[in-house]
Image 1: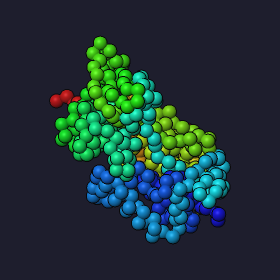
Image 2: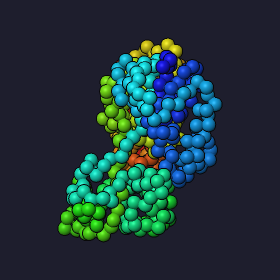
Image 3: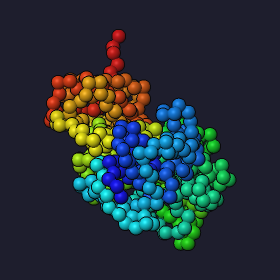
Image 4: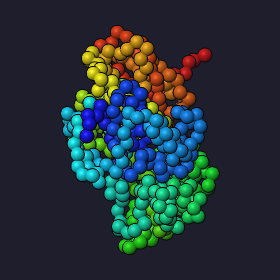
Length: 425
């Protein structure tokens, strides 16, 4: 295979955006590698709308969103799409080994973009006791069964977890004629976007039980029902209030985990909060020449943010392959009060005049009348008031490079979300 300037691993919403950005930034040969038989990733099974509002200014279904990107990729002769290909290993020097129907092959591109996305947590990662009958699905697996395979997972369902895919599947099951007994969430708040709680549950009269969990799975061959119970403030089930719900299907929407086996194999440092690579504003990882974008870095709330962040990774990879380096040290970005996760975790110097830094963060708790602050010691460099902040809804800040004037490598900044002070009259 001829020399590759940029190799992008994964052709979902992140990988497609990264490949386009790399080609548009001057990379002559971009290889987009996808393990499935077609590009698009999870978008292909998301037949609901709500994609593309930020990028295209209209609400698209998942396949429509993917189609827009694929049409642009087809117009770029610099991009080669290689489907049905699995990357087996990635080394710290950027070389990788992959395999497809033609056999195994190795290559060493000028730069690599990780865009493998994320995966769902299983019942065993969520530690749900009981038997192992048929009828237990992750929300994504159930979505694929219905939307791609044309198969119904069951007739009477219980949904554990109120993540966005679980909420969407509650509505989808109702539309296909199934009964949804309820959505049970162990936290005292919904795990998905407010719009999905309203449109998928409230509009269809599907009950949402907060501070509840599944305590036991019944049925040795086919699921016959689940036991559910409320939980205390520490998340421990109150078994004296346990009750049985007959059902033939249990849908799990208990969290997403960035897919980073290849990242770890290459020696990329993983952030404990996001469970994805630690990156700078260029989406550069701790390993030179390896960049990361999209849900492999952190689980975003909107696919538009996935594509935008991955486009930064693709553009940066192309510049790296062409010889561009930042050599001025790093500013560290630290999580402060009420910040559960933040990307990037550092800024590489020097910053160019007029450069804009995209900062994404999640809060640990819901708060009304909040202020997001970026501080250097006691000095407030940036402050933004917000009416309300919620953990499921990401905060996106676009910061000007001039904010960091006078700071040098080794300096540390802290991002915090605190209650807005009320001025006394």
